[in-house]
Image 1: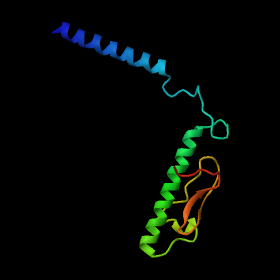
Image 2: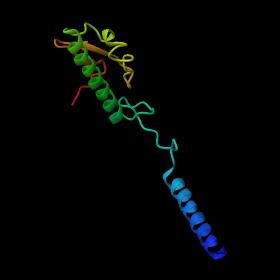
Image 3: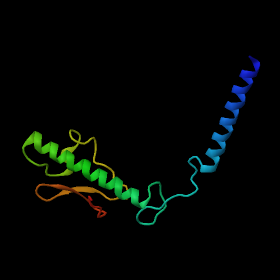
Image 4: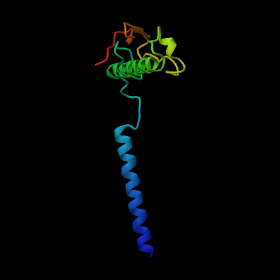
Length: 117
């Protein structure tokens, strides 16, 4: 019986060792290789991710515009007409720009020039 417990403890200790070694080898969230944003500035979101986040925000806004139209029979005049019923707040553009609505029917646009793909 003691031998089985010893074997289980050895196996668990070995697994823990390899887990810690792998964690150290990978870095486990270290800030070593900080990425650059789309303008080359150091930041938490890299250039490709900035554009993806912006595109996701544009889709969210466009969805809110369509929901607004479905419920009201007309399009919103500005993005602020969507808050708080259709959007909790106007999304934050990750590169520091702003969002607005343009055209008829209105589509979400980004002041930084990101476009939906």
